[in-house]
Amino acid sequence: MTLRAHQLTCVRGERRLFRGLDFEINAGDALRVVGANGSGKTSLLRILCGLTQAAEGEVRWHGRSIRELREEFCRNLIYLGHANGVKDDLLAWENIVLASTLSGNPVTQGDAVHALQQLGLGRAVSLPTRVLSEGQRKRVALARLQLSTLTPLWILDEPFTTLDQNSVSELCRTINRHLDNGGMVIYTTHQENDLTARRARCLDLSLGTVC
Image (cartoon, rainbow, N blue to C red; front, side):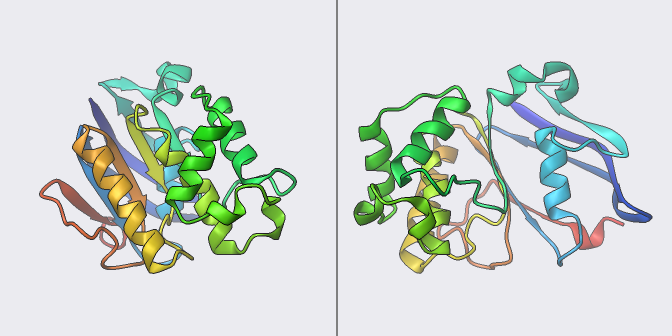
């Protein structure tokens, strides 16, 4: 299981964010993407997901372009963007059920409630998402990961932002379990000590040095 970025170049307007970017990650690998605001971290994740097309280069999944694979690639991917992406009018647990169903991984109400409880949202599972704090809304979005262990590739944009320390620790455990089971994680962060157990196969990519 391999994800390869081959000679990626990203241009926004008249500005080149990065060029000639090459890397490869395999089962059990985590890639941490760092860089200043505006360096192209979110743009890179969107290219890796197939949501944005690179100016040059391509992304390959198992040696094939993700533009050829399309739905097959999407079935192997969980992408959580910088925005929470939750529906305000749905209850917390309903958001998990809906998002999981749309991604082809249907779950029960009980599954959703358990996932939310693991992130400390036991009292909020039956509340409309619009009444939750920003940190709670973030945890609702991240609860999907608890139920996506069979989806190999996780791409996460600033997953630790707005979380308290207990939630950061639980998310670290979730990510590490996924990696231990042969999953792959690519994530952006502004934090230095986000993964509590540093791993031999946790790679760093700084976009500030690629142009």
